[in-house]
Length: 174
View (cartoon, rainbow, N blue to C red):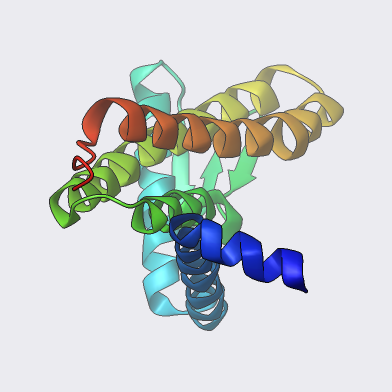
């Protein structure tokens, strides 16, 4: 118990940042749970579906969409709540909000993260459709659940590090 108190006294910024991050993630999970089956979430899934189909069309795939389903003559893929990119975006936003810097830098970081992670997630859904079209179901499932989910989280952390190192001006200590 004494070590914990000593750590808290010696590292107030780290403790505060950790508490902010944990609090943000708790709030996100509570909101996410409430929104998972909502019309708002359905609208986000439709947006991801249409954006994915748009880029697949640009790459020469003849696809159609029906609600949250993207189909071609060889493959079909549904966009579900987990395909929206909201979880890695929430992790990124929680990390930005927990970082000790100016509000302006936090706003820039949040906007940067939302755009960048959404682009990565779109690349994920497009490549998964490509993989599903040209490879076996096992390759698709592996790419979907093991490779891309991990990559999106790692890329999100990398984007946060990029933001913290290159875009944030930490005020000088007084």
